Image: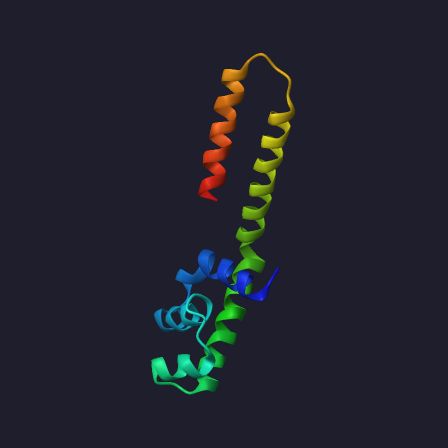
Length: 113
């Protein structure tokens, strides 16, 4: 998985567990795509301090994932729902109303993921 995508997922799941300052600096990198120098300027810290905050935050977020596996479960659930949908689409049945309801439910769930 591309590093920036992974950072975004980690932050989406575990970001609120960081301090407010860590969240602000991390969002500047991941969401605003600012350089370390720009982050340093924005928060009145050195480039090295910005780097340290981001590295520390990366480590904290990865440790949460190592313990809780929420991103892994998220991906497994999404893949499972897609597989169920494929199986339903391949069924040959006359009960199209039930199939339609199941497909709609799965589509709604996939949208929320």
